[in-house]
Image (spheres, rainbow, N blue to C red):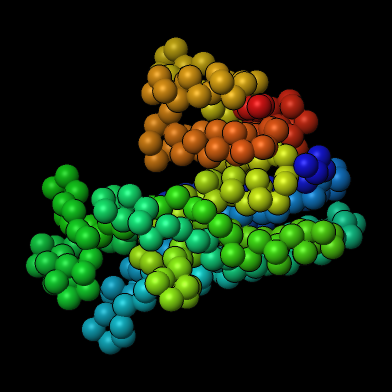
Length: 314
């Protein structure tokens, strides 16, 4: 294990802080702010592999595609994932390089568009439940189900939405390239949005699948495979809590693996919010990681030093 290395998983709040300010210029402003805090970690001597979320950005591309459907074909989900990886990595890289210049930091950055192998027989393919794209009227939903084979669900009277599988990540295909760059001193941007999900078909060929991968689970896998002992998850809340958003909420500052597993079993963490982050941390620690941190971007350095956020240790 390498003690001066960490995988940093940046949440969606690092790109979109206000649902009314979602243009690319606003997203880049948010990235620039987060880059300041990442640069503080790097200046402090930490070597990083950085992953990021892409859920809203994939949604935007899908929506543009739907609006233009009368003129252009719909964009496949795997291409949306690859597109957003490239665009978001470009924004992060540019913002970080500018911060390095201002702070006198002599570091190099490389971005790797990443594919993540999943099992074609993963149970989630039998019961897809991850909503993507826009709401649809019943007629449009039926057309897409018939012509494109989409899985469609009705969403609480608000309309119909497409759902896809969210399979467990098994392997990062570009792992050797990421390791080579890391070993040569690069800050590496990888596993964006969990990576583009792919399978190996009956011929042994790589084949894309219509699915999305949890970014934090993929980040945990990446850290384990690289032998990195610290996973940092940057999110919208300063730390994990018991009874979150209730009068008796209790902050979790320093927690053991067994304690956090117990809290998860008791139902303290909400699906679609803190629960997948805690599940990723458990996976990371059970597979050899030593320390995992949850905090906000502005508290990254303090949390890494143990003065903020939630720290979970094996």
